[in-house]
Image 1: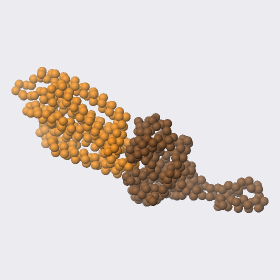
Image 2: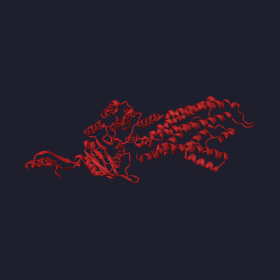
Image 3: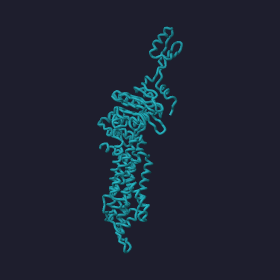
Image 4: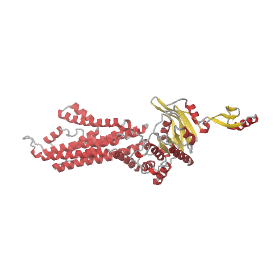
Length: 285
Length: 280
């Protein structure tokens, strides 16, 4: 355990030194300030919005779920930025710079070394994601007196999504250079988001082909599915026209959801980490 | 007792390139062993296999009786890579602390102080790595390799960035380690350094061991040179033992002898003969 903490601390100090945290904190402060402004204006003008006669829309729930969906997207994006920059060069990058070799020859074991870096990055990213998500919830509550029916689970699913990205980034760092790995992980992340949006469009248009493609993408890239499941949970109380309108938007929620995708995501994480360890054990340095 | 390092039929292939072609080598306990060869001869690959950084494609290597790369083998060795770097934001003391924790050393502050003293970095204990010269970083690398009192030390070009004073520090350190029974595999291009400190030397060429022996064995006799009133004469094939007889014979023959010199080929000449004109 002491060795794990030592190596995790080593990675943490490296991130501090490379100003990864400074960049992420600045971006987060900017985002939260803009988000607070947006919530303030949206909820202060909510009373002036009147739906067409005969259409029953809960404007507060609609605005709250939409704004929280936006915050969850931003949190996921910032969390992924943090996670990728903490891990993209753990193996190839550090080996190219000669930082890794003195550590690997110690009697710690390559798997322990990689697992420690994973745990360090996962702990930091989870705390970060939960903090930003919690602050977003607080801003919505203060600005609009609205909170979703499920408060903790969407945040945990966001953190889980980021942890899966960490495992993929570590796996990539074994076989790709830092730059190539960063590009690959961000492209995967982007592909997941596009697939999620396509799924929403597919359901609106009732296109089975697009729905099928989106479902396959959700299982192949479960970080996206967890994020979508979180969106589903925050808008779970919205029914009728309100729910329908939310489903039409980009933060409408998942069509692959619930415990099956959570269990699959956990298994996916274990396999990705296992592959990373196996590849690292076989890699010449 | 197991050999400090033993490799048998060690082979390594990188794609189409054969870096090692069945190398056999033994480093005994307490021995200071030098590895010589031109760039690309396979020296670093051999060391990297021994410390577990590279997997061999054939043969076997063992450190203190344990398979190279295993946890047991890594627990017995200290290693300084040819190209290495410590995090620039760590101080010298923090680098050693990190490696103490990873090596499971219980030496604490006393061990760190002793090691920094050994490599003449006592005054730089609190200095950050990125504020150190290359030579200081290399000496810190040597200190790092000694954390946890390893039985076997593998040093890949440990003096490449050092000035003459720094080289002397490392040379004295190696001699001290030999006195303590530590086995050292020294990979270096500096023949004079190898000749000065090593008990035995192996010369590698294109992934194969060309010759092995002590520096004295490798420095073969080339004859005796006799300077008399008739001029300088070289008696080829004569050895040091023949010198008194040759002088006596010259004096008996009425010659005035001004000097006698036993000629041997230097390690450099033996090296160049072994590796040919290979320049890389």
